[in-house]
Length: 471
Image (cartoon, rainbow, N blue to C red):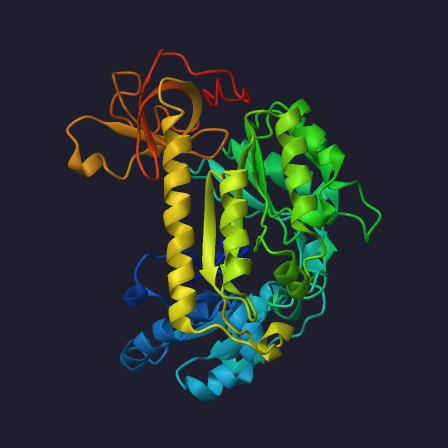
């Protein structure tokens, strides 16, 4: 007689990048057959998992702050099982158990598939476990199903893990291991499964998607995009992150040729100074970066660029920083993510001399953000009066404050657009979710756009934006 699975509650707290969001989905799916369903409340959970990020010191501090707040809950619920996974877990290992006596287990970035067994062992033996073995997971070579049937329109799909670039400031090769690519057949099968469950947009994830498949002799990244573009029912494709040194002409042409590939690329520059780029071990110059941006825009005029900037890298002079500001102005990014440099364990830059003071880093970060705020405002204003194809995610977060129903979605160039119902979706949360709607933009805000739908009929799936920029 088949044993009935006992219903249990799982709480997952995710800190960090899209890869962590994807991995949290894997954790949820792996534990579902053991009778676990997710809960939004730590107080009701039988198992709590913190999926962590170590890329910056601030993210690591968030981990231990959150863990500290759970100590009282653990005392009140001694049978609660508390685990730490992700990059901090891989980096710190047993130190976490020593620092946090209420934590039951620590599992690394390559141990996710072993999680059900870890939890069962803790329940049976009342032990504490550390598993940070970096051996490849068996599941990495099988199709993964990181979804459940809900109203989610967009999903992340990991196509590769780890990194071989060893930028001098970065811990990724040490906490996620060397670069490995999933087989394209498994990726395509996962995407088809997602589409069957109602997903209309996928974002392909990797530390450097441009080098996808090279080590394994698989298809190239641009070839993978062409195959994903052929998946029926899929409306849009995005990807991140693209390393400038490996950006190929074939990838640029894919933006011209593929109707589902969104006209947006995240291309991290990190610094506008060649001297700093060399110390970062980025393996390209600003001149080479500029040429690729120019080639992109000559082939795909309405492409939107976003980037990452690190300020206060060891040895960064005021002149180096001014060159970064000059580059930001020249490229005119749609948006950027800027961060203060912080030393990370194992990363070579932690041992570099000529550290920049916290006050100086804070000032430089503020100057970058202020400059980008002006540029983003100008680029958003240029969209007023244009018609944008918006893939609707669902109701806007501002609905509670408004009398009329407001919907929200994104344009191909990744701009958030909020628009009022105007009768086309009535009040049902599912009426427009997952559909493409043509919206005329009538206002530009700092982080979003506002507009009105111009017809009751959505635009065809997979079509790109119309007149993405007026000039």
